[in-house]
Image 1 (cartoon, one colour):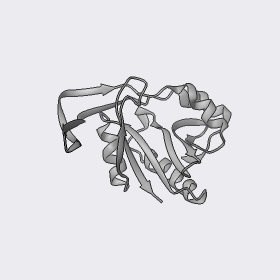
Image 2 (cartoon, one colour; image 1 turned 60 degrees about the vertical axis):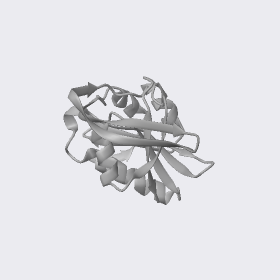
Image 3 (cartoon, one colour; image 1 turned 90 degrees about the vertical axis):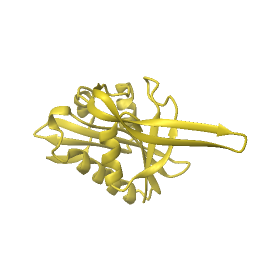
Image 4 (cartoon, rainbow, N blue to C red; image 1 turned 45 degrees about the horizontal axis):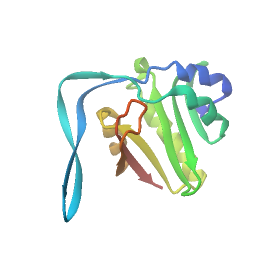
Amino acid sequence: MLFRPATIADIHQCERLDGSYVTDYVWQMEESASADGISVSFRRTRTPRRMDVPYPRDMQDLYEDWQRNECFLVADELGSIYGYLDMTVRHWRWHGWVEHLVVDRPARDRGLATRLLEAAEHWARGSELESITIPLQAKNDPAIRFVVRRGYTFGGFVDRYFTNGDIALLFVLRL
């Protein structure tokens, strides 16, 4: 498996990958407010039944992100793309923002997400970025557990971030 910068020819294959996932857990937001403060917490909760969740992002921006010539990496084996990572740079803070991290469902559990993320972290350090943020659905327990194992820490949330209206939990790695 080769992990390399994407070419224009890779974009169409990236758009066709299955980024959906299955989960038995979600992260529920609990909020309380009083005259003296506001408290927000997230709690991992088991779902009553296994959920099959569609990929929450729109693929229409892949070509535009690729044109930015920043960090768009693919996992390629003999010309077939099995995963990709698209990270844009927020120049005002010199910060990487992972727009997409997708491994095709049939190709999971082979370490592709780990290797794509390692390559993006290497690129970010070489580009002297200060940090990387990965926004994840509160439903995406498998990805949340993955990034936490990699040293990312909770950095906040954005309500209605995804095109389907879901909240995004932000996970940050300081470089």
